[in-house]
Image (cartoon, rainbow over all chains, first blue to last red):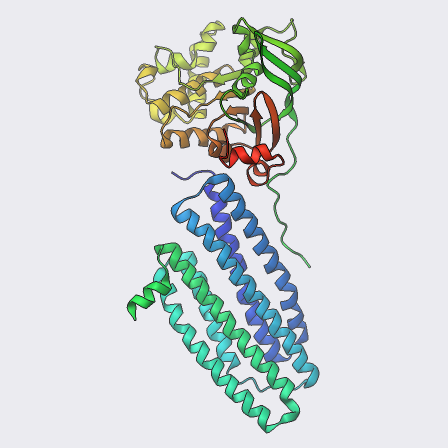
Length: 222
Length: 265
């Protein structure tokens, strides 16, 4: 039987999706600001982060209310735990995107024609793809997708290591641009962190659907 | 920049329909209620909670003068107003009052009559016998009580043949038939299983569009689920009354917090 208050659970679910879409958009825009050297786009990411933060607060309030008033159990309760954890991950994605555009502004202040991005665009594409799939696994309730995302994270880590090496080499070649390359290393790390958050969400979705820890399942597979 | 509005679950209150002021009440020498002051808003569900003997059922029964039937019952002070009318004014006819303020009891109490006759019992007493009007009332009230689909093909069978949950919904339909503004419910689900309880709770949620509902319940989660406002009573005192969200998430009084957390009572 569907109860009148189950709509409140659907509202939590839809706010997670709204937050996820905004987080994906922020990561996309952060890359565009860097690629196109566009300060207006950078500003829009910073503004968008406030909205993401507000949605996280709202989800926290909705979850606290639902637990207090509705006494959820089993999957409903897991959903609420996941909502709090996933919304925190998505809030961190927004923070990483903000950090990327702030560093982009510093780079452009130092060199307004800067264009050496290493493998950052590839990382961004992968991280966003992971984030979208994590959200898709949540909305479709598909633990297989969640399982796949974990494997993609290793590719992003490898690209980040590649970037690190490349930008350190560039630093050695041109000491006058050490500041800029250091910012690029941090930007690369931020995209790697975005992929980590996508992985976290995938693990949370897996727990929601199976009540099993994906980390434990992977240990068992290994 | 536009940030999404965070919806308030508390919101503005509907206008007050029932006002209880400075109300003291006793059974013989024993005072049962002390200085009760509260407003009950129309088209809201108000839950009364508290441990046994706290006075919640007594106060509920004062709202439609059910306590008149107890010889030792006595109002020591204060008044109960419904829509501005002092219901204990000597000019008020208690029977007329109870048409406007219906009651559903802990144990379902259908009469040993057909489902049809149970619903229209109050109308028969009023001398209403026109078949079309009675038929319309039966259908409207059984639909309103979410029972129509289950019984429409057997309206002439005994009300006692229904399950416990159905009997309780039949009693709600019977209370609705005389056209009340207020429905008082005294532990309406305490004798029901979880599925029947869920149906009654869904019904309460629907009925508040048309009625003002006051429910006494021992089940705190039920109060949390169905009510807009909750009043917590202890030893005849109203300790705290507030939006249900507030009571269950962050009550003002330590006693309320202790009770809802299961630390006493």
